[in-house]
Amino acid sequence: MFVQDGEVFASSKDVAEMFEKQHKDVLRDIRNIEKSLKDDDNLCGRNFALTSIDEPMPNGGVRKTNAYNMTRDGLNTHYQRHADADY
Image (tube, rainbow, N blue to C red; front, side, top):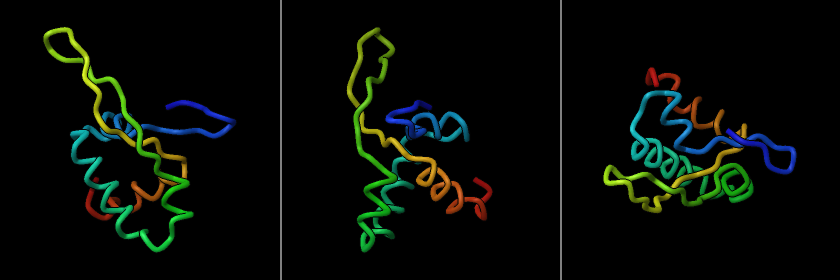
């Protein structure tokens, strides 16, 4: 988690680690949330920002991979969508 311009953000990688899920599954879930919110660009775009992160490789190299930075509201939306599914 990090603070930028006074607002707290969590990356999709942070969320995957917090909930002991695979990052690819968290990415899929966020894309599904984006699809369901496609008519509300203000809510979606403001709370889920696509970015890239450096992913360490087993051989010592690094590769770029997609990730999302989520606001507190984005994180709450993600969590609420999965609360009933025992996320």
